Length: 409
Ligand SMILES: Cc1cc2nc3c(=O)[nH]c(=O)nc-3n(C[C@H](O)[C@H](O)[C@H](O)COP(=O)(O)OP(=O)(O)OC[C@H]3O[C@@H](n4cnc5c(N)ncnc54)[C@H](O)[C@@H]3O)c2cc1C
Figure 1 (tube, rainbow, N blue to C red):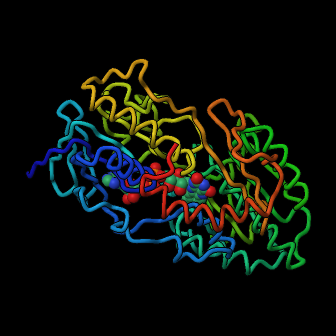
Figure 2 (cartoon, rainbow, N blue to C red):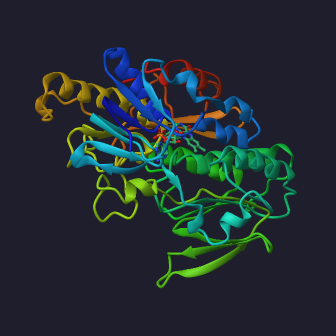
Figure 3 (cartoon, helix red, strand yellow):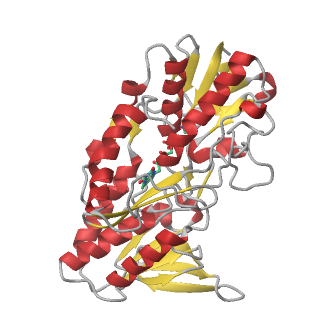
């Protein structure tokens, strides 16, 4: 088994991993850093909702990973399988043992399609679609365009945390607007089935979204979890938890847009880094400092971390500086006790909620669900300028600045 040692090892070269390693390198060019990331391809996932709506090309969401991996660092194209935090080591699938002074864990979130009976077989067929992968986002648009207006369009949201909690609503509003433009929209045609209890956690934006729902004649069904799909008969089965005991409800559809249940990747769940006795298995970090609660030379951010806020790239933009500055302080001052010097993350997250073609509400808030708005106007109003921000400005910021460790904090 080969063995190599670095100042910092980063697991996962997605939004979080690339941003943090580029930021670290800008601040401390002498660091020896290794990135462990198996994929040659990087995706700009936030645009997949627009792909589903036919308002963005899928090709424009895909770029080679190597463009964002600086030449000074070692890129190990492999999967981490096991963590040995007591020995400051990770073991990869190909059998390398890599040791570190500091570890940053950022492998993203796992899509648990298999937890819905029938879904792995039927996804991408017979009107069953999802904007959660590039291929099925393209299919989502085909399904949307083929709607006849005679069968129902169902949009689901699971009971687990998901990346971008706004995505199920964004694609639903785009579909409703598509039907409206074609003169097919009528009350009761579009349905939102959610395992949750509210349309959005922050009241200011929830009130605005309820008006959008009314405008499109969308029917909402809370405490309904999707448990099975039958692509042959085009029937979705939900567990209705408004009754005791819960009841199974079968609903026919012409379009079924699924947001799958999500959890930390399995290799994190079964590792000593995860939150004990939590089936979702997130990396167990302090929510303010992003430092691991049991292994202080390990940090985590992004979708895999146990941070009780909405899992988004916008949240990562604020997490990067906190994590990197805390890690650099510990490294330079040779102490793992951050104490008073700790940079603290306030749970900031943002969700650009598309409410139709050319319309968007920009929700921004913190751990206390208090709005933290950037612009000097009421962001709960639908605006064309915010649509342009989402479609034109944010992707450019992502590729040019955010992934390269600029514009953090
Ligand atoms: C449909 C959709 C819409 C969204 N909309 C928005 C939005 O409007 N605004 C917003 O801010 N965010 C949005 N997001 C969320 C945003 O894309 C994620 O929060 C962000 O990509 C998470 O970054 P991450 O680095 O934690 O994970 P990812 O970017 O998913 O990267 C994880 C990386 O880890 C790697 N990896 C996995 N397993 C291993 C392993 N064993 N070893 C090594 N590496 C591994 C993967 O290959 C991957 O490259 C959206 C997401 C989706 C899917």
